[in-house]
Length: 398
Image (tube, helix red, strand yellow):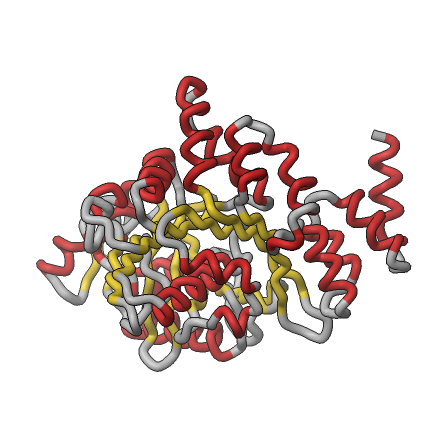
């Protein structure tokens, strides 16, 4: 498969050509740049979230959670995708892709949108996924973020996590929380991301935004002179998780994301990354530093669009004790008893959306982690759950 290689040297030698590992010399085609810009314009203007490019398929967009092939677009060849990616990829990302077959970068089409790109290698050749980053940050008020979660933004130290699967709106929620800090506090915020997604102008705070690999060598080096509030982006590995916990412990407010589906599984995921002899110490540190977890998933909205269901964990003394004692399995029941302080389980959030006629019962059931419990709750409220009969029969046989 053709890979980008030695792109920096190629551009220095001949600004209009790129060197590829299989194809000797590929001209940088202005038509390819125009084509990718046109597709990104379609992505942004159609209200879609993602654009997918795959060899052997026409361009595909994801609109309201559904994958749709763009009408009138031809099937893409390997050369088509390679040309479009070559037209917009930064040099260092081209080098990274040549070494690892994966890279992420941000790209801005002036006057259209800011885009997050993921370029990867797969069976048929090079592929890419582009996601729209809204030009303006939605506020906590616009997103309907609860007062209890907003209060986390006023803390002087601690760890606040927003979790969920890919495409669940984590970055949007996190950006809204950082925007609230920016509006109501007078501190220094630093965001450490790869790549930078939402751009935050200075409001009452001073905001420093750094991209790993561009403005700093690593998350660790960027946190040496940690300011008051830090957005670490995704907690991808053990080193980043360790730094986030330690920084939160030493008097800083740290925001981050994880790809976990529930609050309890978030805590388990963090602890399980450490070796067995470290886990007891990490539990203690996490019980003291973790202040809140917002686990969310996007559901298809009745009438079009999407709406977030959010599980909210506010770490009080009781939750802190459960984390320290390794009893995270008791957290869901403790959350049900913690409604007065703003806690809500995912099933309760999904049921609320159904009751408000924002989401169909079947959509809520599909997005639920604890499906049997949600079915029982839906039945108790008089909702038709016949769509679950086949799955429940299979479960009984199993």
